[in-house]
Length: 500
Image (cartoon, rainbow, N blue to C red; front, side, top):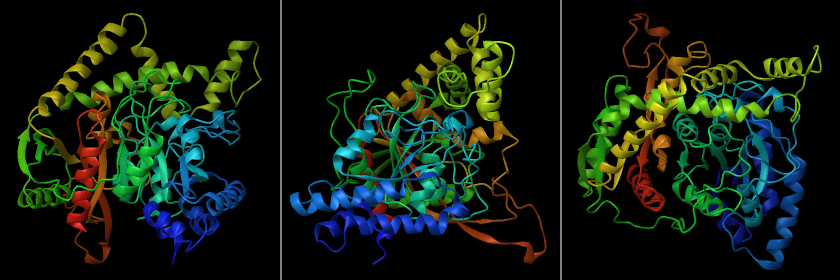
């Protein structure tokens, strides 16, 4: 039995039957990290010694008290913008490259109480800004499905670690699609919970009204297990919500009977890879055959979502990242004539290009004379987008869309074209603006030809030997109404069974 191939649920059952120990499980994942991570670069920090020591303690606890939690003894990876006490927390940035957290994030505290073990901190675009995990000070992460391609971003390290079986599950953070987009590119399950369902205390803030922590896993059941462990009201986060329904492992075998599924027409237009559209169309037909009612719905303000997002997000980024000034945290350049020089030199050398771009843009948006013209107007458009979703949920139980318009693109392909890069999140951003929950489910694999562009159009190379087909995954996005994670998970599991 190759232990790191197991899902969380399978590993739990194996631990319960005493087929192996937690130490065996952890060592199996660490061996995979040693074998693969030099080429993938999914981890910034590997916690080998700490993970093995904790596994030994957990094994003793299991021997004396039994096994009552699904996550006890399970090796997980954590995105490096979520704080673990006494562990380096870089956020993928030079400016925090030697910062060690003095406390645990609330989600980490909960996972520790559940008995989980952390094998490492995963790579990300600097401060979670990016769609490819190429914007990290620690170098790009590569997609385990094809090392020439990106894993998506910004939780690309977490998605790659789960895909390459270097851990059994992971946590990421999602501001505009940063859990779902890399999950789609890497072919794993990624769940962005309703805003407020999971505490953000201990998550390094990027855009506070959009950020949310969520699970990345190899199955829908595992996503439910992880979400159940980290959700709930937290007195350290005033935006967290109490009395939300507890997450359950899905078990409804008749979920499609009388289920009303909405297909937003604005998500199936020019720019969507025709192979992805074809596969989703085939799946929709299968769901109809299973008893689901399919309805076309309209989200008319979707076309404004990306522009709205790229006003609100950088505005909040510029405010949140102002604390990194070379004095309070990490990297500091003690050169120049005065304190202002220290600020300027530290931020100039400490931040990467994408962070600087968004800080400058956000500062401009919030400046006198432009706040009303841009930020205030974007907030009004955000309300219209939320209203669109609410009108849709009066008619249907969930919405199905592609997670991304294309499969994973090649490393370097879009790094010099930020506007084109931002389009990677076009189907995920509206969900964050509305604060809704959504899950990306890998439904099948498509064949992308090396000589076919992102719109599926042949580039007319006539020499057959120049062609090379690669098999790449993509995701189906299931969007639900507020705090209806259980319904999303039931639907996702039903589809997972249907296509397996």
